[in-house]
Each structure stands twice: as structure tokens, then as C-alpha cells.
Amino acid sequence: MDFSSIFSNLILGFTVAMSAQNLLYCFIGCLLGTLIGVLPGIGPVATIAMLLPITFNLPPIPALIMLAGIYYGASYGGSTTAILVNLPGESSSVVTCIDGYQMGRQGRAGPALAIAALGSFFAGTVGTILIALFGPPLAELAFEFGAAEYFSMMVLGLIAAVVLASGSLIKAIGMIL
Image (cartoon, rainbow, N blue to C red; front, side, top):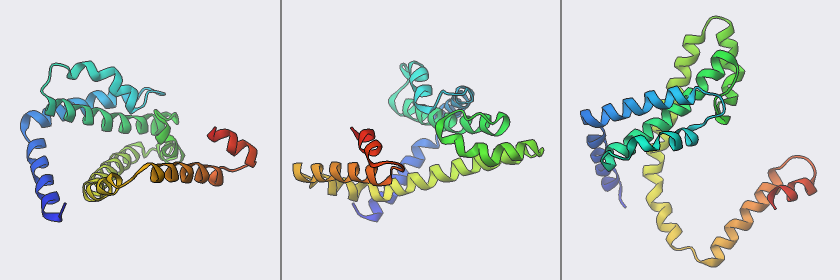
């Protein structure tokens, strides 16, 4: 795929996503995802699993947009409890507890929540653009893989897990088995 087709597909996706109906479903999904994501221990995947029946009677595009909104809302909701009560709502919000809770204790919980929201938006936007740019070439490369390449990738992943694991070698090998 060339850059012009990627760009035209992104523009098409934005025009579909920016319709009033789809924006409403995205807002509802973000709101529901944030409300459920605030609950400690319930991450984005569990939130989508719980709220999936809401989308059964929707057309496919609004349903997928609503599910994406639920996912991103739940991801942001986990940082809310991390900042306000030092209890991460999901595992990826653990780092937010370090600085966010301290800002909240100093009376700057609002700016901490705003920073978390802007960081979440920026990361989601950059991630979407990178996937759109590098997804097609990587998919073409993956089509060229045979059994030997898949085996090599699995072995590389297992070796990397053992090398990156801290502590004893026996525990690292036991971890991957």
C-alpha cells in the first residue's frame, strides 16, 4: 500500500467516525467505559465483556465505535482512581499512582486528571497513526512467513523472556514453561 491510499483510507474513516450518530455512540461508550473503568480491578477488556450486550442491536460501525469508546473510557477510568485514591483501576494505571496521587494530595487532582486524559488521547492518536502506517507493510511481511519463521519468532520470544527476567535463570525458564 502506498501513502496516498493509507491517507485516503484514514480520511474515509474520519468522515465515517465524525457523523453525529457515531459521535453520540462514541460519547456514550466513553462515558460507560469511564464509569465502569473507575472500579478497581476491572480493566478495559472486562469492561468490554460486560458491556458487549449493549451493542447487539446496533449496526456494525456504530457498535465498533461504541466498543472502542468503551475501551478508551475504561483505560482512562483506571487512572482516575489511581490519582484520587492511590488505587489503580487497572494494571496499566500503576505508574499513574506514583505522580498522580502525589499531585492529588497537593490539591492538584484536576491538573493530574487533565494530564492523564491528554496523555491517553495523545497515545491513542499516535498509536492509531503508527498502526495505519506500519500495519500494511508488516502484514505483507507476515504473509511471507512459513513454519520455520514462526518457529524462529517463538524461540526468539522465549529467549528474550529469559534474558529480560531478573533473578535466577531457573525461575526465568520456569516462568516461560
